[in-house]
Image (cartoon, rainbow, N blue to C red; front, side):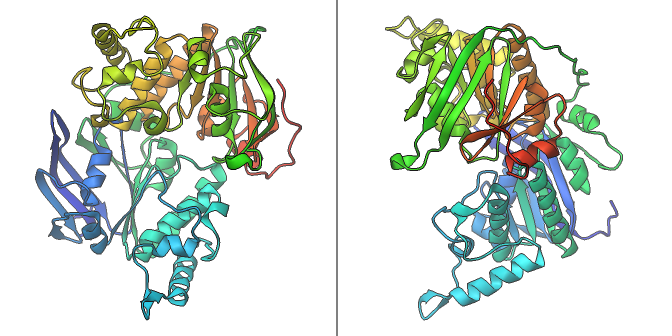
Length: 514
């Protein structure tokens, strides 16, 4: 990098400690004004902590933060915003029942005579939308927007507040390929207008496509920068993990003719008995089979998984496990009968963040060995088995008594995967099993799913990662507005074709009954 190049952001020797953990150690980061600068690293490498420091959510124990060449001392995100730093979080922070305008100006409302000046706000939002090709209608309700449009509302929020450097945290995690292309077009517009983007992602091919510079962080410290034009995704991955990655092996089908999970005509009503969120779904999952469910988020996949687990009651249809009707069974009975569950939202459905790891290890399994015998919990055995899972699944934490909240998202996910796989379920309901994990952990989880499949486990896989769905599925259904509208061959379908089905761009095929 030319030393005379103006820097938007510079971090010098940033160190951040938490009790028992050094999250960042002497990190260096130089982000040129007007570039897209990607930050990659394994989960637990310290990326999130570093960005929270830049955004004023943490204060560094050592080091300097410079914005535009001047040292700053942020005490809150408000200080960062005032200095031109904005952050778009992976999980959108929007009010569905508000319009685009109301969401964008919330907390920074222009007023006239003590009331919201809608005309001024509308004019400013249209200017931002036109300048950066965001295509937003200020008067549209957010609940009527797709995922890609919601993300553009989040971008408009930080631009409205005057941000000149945007931090995007896993911005493509929930987007289909067409939406990713649109986002990259938006980022090109931001660059053309002289804005700076810091792009955090685990999708290395996307990083190489969109970034001008890549900084790699490993175990809390900077290990180097890379030029995406001359560095392969595999080389980046090896920089992240500090070792050579194994070459993935091809696999043959292990699908057997024995049905394990059979769903017939399943319909799930919406909140308050409203329009069905799952409608007349029929599918079969056999031993040794991965059945993938593709769909833009919000099209009924989450509700389908909830119904299979017994968390939602259907208004019609049946669910059978091993030929036995379990439609009226409780969630606990289903779990004890061999249904494993990797939840979509690990914080809401999968963990107790303020509890130690050993307690999280036994969640959903507390009535069975090694943790329990149906009446009492064996804490010593639970701690010992948690230690085994930590070793076997590379969960990085001081020990079984560490609070779950102290772990990075990826390490939390590996604990959940280890917990569920250790129970050897007959059926595994895997909802976004690698969401928020790095390429190394993703490869481990994929291999675990493949091995379990080879041993006869039946798996229902819901994911926003089309590479994951295509690479792991034996049968692949597409869900749109609560219905299975197409069944495609994962061996031949392209991500673009799959994305077309997911967004309704193709004429739907008859609902796929396996």
